[in-house]
Image (cartoon, rainbow, N blue to C red; front, side, top):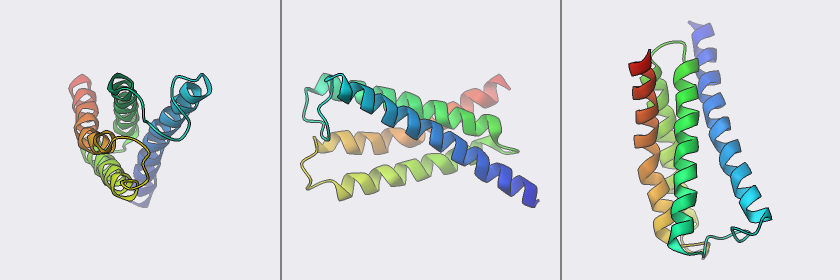
Length: 129
């Protein structure tokens, strides 16, 4: 039983780390190349949608990894990670609301997309399996 708990935690952490590293890495590359400004998202809506798209894809990839590594009940593991991502996005949206970092709809859209993209990853994993 204890062994599965550690495997579960490891699966969740691995998926979260993959999503975070891919997101932050892509952000850094885009900021360094001058495509995104450093430290804010005051850009045209099309570019913000691009950022939302790659972050949602990276969330999907991380969630799929969670499903693959989960010792049992992959959907449960992925939904836990999806809820954590949603909560983190909501906290981020609330705490940065008055910091003038970009349009509010960006942060709230991340919160809305987190759980559905996680669920889809688990669903596709289970369907394939």
